[in-house]
Image (cartoon, rainbow, N blue to C red; front, top):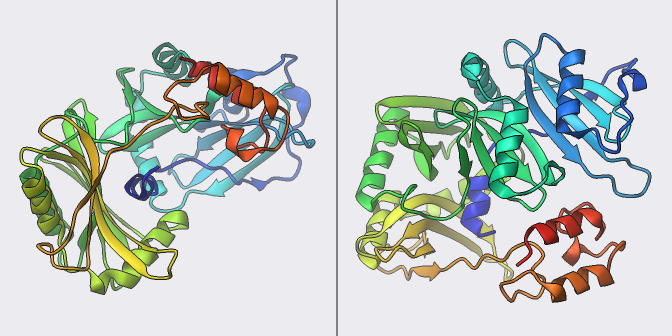
Length: 398
């Protein structure tokens, strides 16, 4: 994954449930004798245990073969979106291994309140969302890492993440499947001038002292939504300014986790940045006449030689419909900055020899290390090269 893709993915909410365990957790009274209970039984159990709390998240965690079983996790939200209640369920017996809760922290608390506000509009349940995903991808549910009900950029959708990092969104109102592609396309890109206008609008809405550091677009039923993240370099706080036509949503929050590390790195070097987003867009337009932009971001990283590199990057679609990533140094005058364009080369998971196909040679390599802790062949990152990795490889065959 590219630096810009990592930067943007740090903003995307992904439900993780490190629950506080409650005394007297439910035991195997709710067990079910099946080889794998599946997401739907996990959902039914969660609704039985927490009948007054909407179910918003399901996860699937593969055991590591060292006594830790494969489990399903569930997340149910309270009425004001501040507490998430969850279960850990044994994937074979259906028994409840753990039961607990966690606080929903900013900015996800705002997103959860949006989910609850739009919850009456939901017409697609987890079962239907998973069915649509199976029909679209041809992949079984066993390859789904987690699925959660989310609200971003004016959309209400099921966010499905697979063990090989594939991501799909299933609209919770219409059932439409939207693949999430971290590149520029004709559907999700706008002209440099349009992106300049979007940033200018975000600046006006956010107020003085806020600076755009990253943005991404999303195709919605109502048109193309744009989410721009603004930084206050003095405090390190962020504002998310989402626009869709005349609709505007603004959320201010303090970054946490990986996003906090990203922001801290940018904040520490912000006084060295002399290229504005608007100048960067103009540079793209000059380098690639007729091009469009899907997303952009500012990043600052320490290089192997100890120097710090602070850059602007963007996913660009050229006039010839060639998607690429374009990067310039943010700390030198834009007219002196040498832009670097890279074309993403995507290999399917399981294409170990990187020949563009998943075939017999790749299968032979996996089988040679089968059952061993060999990270290069561990596609789902559970610590072992085993059956789940074989399933991923076979799903990408050809």
